[in-house]
Amino acid sequence: MPLGILSGPPAFRDRLYVGRPNVGDRTAFLSRINDMLDRGWLTNDGPFVQELERRVAAYVGVRHCVAMCNATVALEIAIRALELSGEVIIPSYTFIATAHSLQWQQITPVFADIDADTHCIDPGVIEQMITPRTTGIIGVHIWGQACDVDALAEIASRRKLRLMFDAAHAFGCTHKGRMIGNNGDAEVFSFHATKFFNTLEGGAVTTNNDELAAKMRLMRNFGFSGYDNVVYVGTNGKMNEAAAAMGLTNLEAVDQFVEINRRNWDFYRAGLAGIHGLSLFSYPERDRNNFQYVVVAVDADTAGLTRDELVSVLWAENVIARKYFWPGCHRMEPYKSLYPHAGLLTPVTEKVAQRVMLLPTGASIDATTIDIICEKLRVAVSRAADVRAMTRQRID
Ligand code: T4K
Image (cartoon, rainbow, N blue to C red):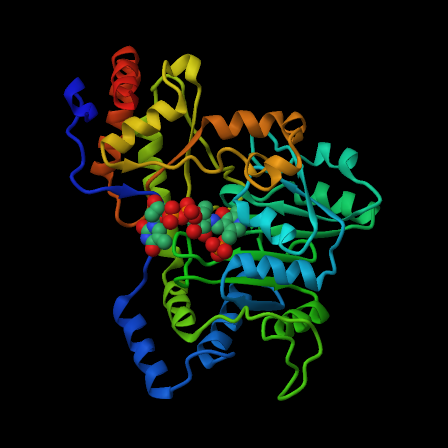
């Protein structure tokens, strides 16, 4: 039953999704696809991939960009190229790919808690998790906001650990005035369709380490060094030319994407103001963010409704809000069975994961739509008891 009957605005007819792709100039993209077909070079380090790597490296201000087929494989390759083994410390509050990229290679992800304000890994808890088997730390720049890079670098250097970053959310973002992509031994971007900057599917590792970059280039191509000569265990991590064509097109529009996202975020800030129990995650002005994520924390005691109840209300209204990254990696398999007590060390993760929901943004959403979404939330919270009864009925 739509919430509209509680005298709020009517339900949307079409579904509104989190993660709608940002797409640049369609004509430019199709013209590149034509070039690709005319050339008959579809993948394997083609000219578009090489151009994209050069342009991304210049944009990020980093020595090397190694393009890959997606960020999960990019994480796996970076982890292997850095020779991580044993245990690696990561936050539990991240997309499951961060943990899986280690477990896939028989490396144990050790789940650290996060900071309640930034949602990023808390450097204060890391020291106690280091054991003789620990070889590295992977920080995740959640919501495009840099984690405490300096504190992590200090710990890594003192304890002789490798440090890399899952920067899947952070393309176009800065840390202390410098583009993310330059920190630690390596940083990994996702260029998935849902990301701020997409290549359909894709990802990249950026690094200022020449040797590491060369190694990852070989590893993404089965370990081939020239024809008929394999020098490493490798995999197929190559980006194809159609993906790179999309990347080149979208790279020309990144400023526009930020502008749209920023505008939407401001509309949400105005629209959500004064709704009891709902707080919009804000990005510190000192750094540049891509505003790809509209993150709202629900305080159930004040709102009168839990995050899950609000999400089901929105779904009933065709607003497909998401509960990223609930319930936390440590509560998903195989980690849940392997480390049943991991939750004891991650109280902040548990709390944040229960409260957060993401709302739709991007070019397909305008001010009027955002107003209506906010109004739906306002009506739901102001009539929490009725809504709770209605959502219970729906569930029953
Ligand atoms: N590290 C972190 C911190 C990450 O967040 C991710 C990926 C990775 C690593 C790994 O990166 P990749 O290997 O994927 O490059 C989605 C994305 O598939 C995933 O890339 C992303 N994080 C994650 C946060 O979100 P799901 O399982 O939520 O996808 P799905 O199919 O439910 O789609 C999400 C939303 O996007 C839906 O509301 C529909 C919309 N959508 C999706 C696609 C694919 C569209 O509107 N159009 C589309 O083409 O994981």
